[in-house]
Each structure stands twice: as structure tokens, then as C-alpha cells.
Length: 504
Image (tube, rainbow, N blue to C red; front, side, top):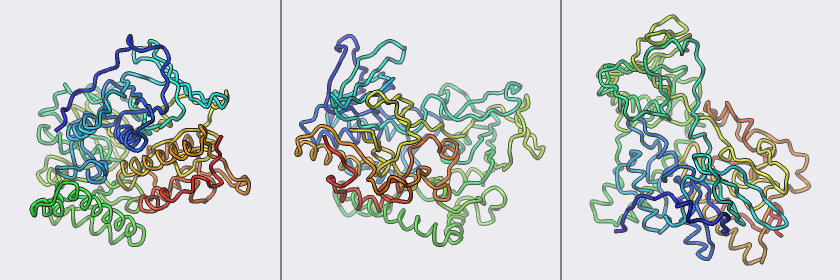
């Protein structure tokens, strides 16, 4: 077994002022590590570096330190196709970080990593056919300048340093502790405390049961209900395959396919028969909350299943705590904070020693980095996207933006294959620049929002939809379809000499 070592920050003093690589990968989270694996194995002649603003790998799993932090997708699909997952389907943040560290160690990716590297500006020169990437250290001191032919953006889609925290009246009057889950203080003692968790999505469904055993009581205060999916945290198929002696690679592949089929079926049925799907979700909840559990008013959402992401509750832990009386739900809006807690719009006072805001992310397109192409600033909000991964007028750049209804990482593997195929194609053609162009016959198509709000409409996306790149009319190739099963066929079949691709 490979030795698992802690990645170390790069020694800035040992580096020259300018470093040049064939490819720069931005981000050392699950997207960046997976992309680096594909680049190293599929394009072994390419030099590359991985630029990471934090001092360690993990991305989301480095940022999120709140109690019980865990995946909200099964690890057979959230994990990579090339690295078997051995363990329960829903994994803790610590288990995911260990999995990522294994991938880094087993594939020698640590030497490519440049930690504590914050990117300020990326500038493309058509004359040089190079990106110039200006960086600084987290303490503000100047970092190296990087030059690369191709940028692979894997930095995620939200602001890791500044979560979304609404400004409620009276917050300054509150005498207790107010903390956002994303900026959790690991030294905070909540034993015996009265806790209010604001929110009802995946983060709330994770932190609530984790805190409930030590806290005096936990109240989930939500503006509107969410759909929850309760299921035992195990895979019967994986367990059976292991029992009969099947090797782990085959177990991983078969279990992955099984989960994908289940997700595909659920996605289809949520559109075609949403009421029946909701009744089935209710029945799963009752197995943990009890047969007489009341769904009105706290657990009857106003939208259909999958219009926002289902909050997975492994082993029904949040509902088991409700059955035990350790957790309760309040559906209302906040009128104002009081010195001792929160008063809702309906006049209810909720006493709280600690308030945890599980209120979501702030969207951050391309990590908030400034981009220029031949001296002209890129306005992502006015830029058409090609399949949600490349962009008209922005050469030699790919962006990994995963799936909402399926595991994010499924797209990491798909785009890993695509980008490596594109790089090899460029080498075969003897060119060093590829751009995405809008064909002339589509020049009049309307620029539309990244995704329709009746398709997928979580708050973090709706708040900042105007900042995202645009789809071009209703053309399937000019949008991010959010359909893994469609893209798993369409992306490998892309004609790299099609009319959308311009080479130089």
C-alpha cells in the first residue's frame, strides 16, 4: 500500500519568479485531484502544476468542519471511477479526505501541488498562445507568475471564505453565539446548550443529528420545507458481492452502476409522477420517525422532488432524533433576533444559546479571478457556454462544473477524458490553440440563464444566476444539461473538428 503523507506547502523561496507548464490545474479538491490523475495517465508527456489557495488538499472537505460533516451523495458515484470506494456509501469528511490523500499518494500527484497560492489574474495572449497567471500568497506577499498553454479550472463554484449569511434585524442584540456552518469553530462547546439551526438543506440535515446527542435540544428553523431521502447507510449489493469474494474493482464498478440506475430512475419518476415519489419518500421517513409522524406543515415542500437537491439522511438519523424528542422543527420566517434567541414572523420566541446558520453558499464564478483575453476583460455573465465546460471567445480553458442531481464527480471523470482527448487532438494537428466559436447560423440566438428555474432552483443558484455564463437558446450543445446519462453518451461522441472548434 502506498504511504499516505500530509501534503506540504511549497517552499516559495526555492521557486523562480516565473514557472512554465503545459497545463495548470486550479484547485486541489475532488475535481482538481481527479483531473490531475486523468492528465497524468492519459497525457503522460504533459507537464503540469496544481495551484491551490489553501494549505492542504480537499476543497469542500477541507472547508467544512461542522459537526458530522459528510457527503450527500453515495461515494460509489461521488468517488472516482478509477479508485474503488471501500466503506459505507455516505462518508464523513475525514473519510473523504483520506480517500483523496490515497489518490494523491498512489499516483505521485503531491509533487505537482503548489499550496497557499491565490490567483489574482489570468491573461491569455493569442500571440504567445499562453496563459499568464499572476499569484500571491495568502498573507498578501507576491507569489510566482505561472505561464501555461492550457487552464483547467477545478476551483468549484462557491466562495470558501465568505458564506451566505442574511442580515436579520436585531443580530447585534443577540447575546448568544451565532456561527455559520461553513466557518465553524471546532473549539466551540455546545454540550447542554439550546441550539437553533437555520436552514433545512443537506448541511442542516447533517449538523442537526450530529449536535443533538450533546445538546439540550436542537430546533430546525426553516423558511420552507425540503425533501429528505432516508435510507440505511449501506449497499446491500456491495456487501453481497464482497461476501461471495468479488474483487473490489468489480464491486466498485457494479455498485456504481447500480446507484446510477437508481438515480436515473428517481430523476425520471420525479418528473413523471412526483406525487407518488413524495409518498415513497414519506414512507421511508416513517421507518425512522414513526408511523404517526406528521408531515404538515414542516415536511411538505412547495416544489416537486428534485427541483432542488434531495437531502440524504443516512439511517434516518435526524428523524430518529425527532422521534426521541431531541429535535423539533419550526417553519416560519425570522422577524428579528432577540437578546435570548429568535422571534419569528408569527410571534413565536425560540430561545437559543447557539444559533447555527446553515444558510448556504455565495456563488463565485471562476473563483472570483480576473480573466483577460488579449487585453479584454472576460465578462462571464455574457459569455455563451459550450456544454457547460468551455466558453465562446476564451481559448484553451476548460471548467469543471459538476451535477446537481447526480454526484459532482461523475463529471470530473467525463471531462477528464474529454480534455485529455482534446489535448492529444491538438498535438496530432500540430496546433497550440483551440477556441470555441458560435457558428454563424446561431449568431441571433438569445442568451439565456445557465439553467431554467423550473428545472433546478436552490437559493444559492437563484440568488446569483445572473453571474453565471449563458446558454445559447435551447441548443443542447450550448448549455450544461445537468443530465449525466445524456452527457455520458454525448461528450465522448463530440466531433473535435466540428464547427464549434477553431484551431490555430
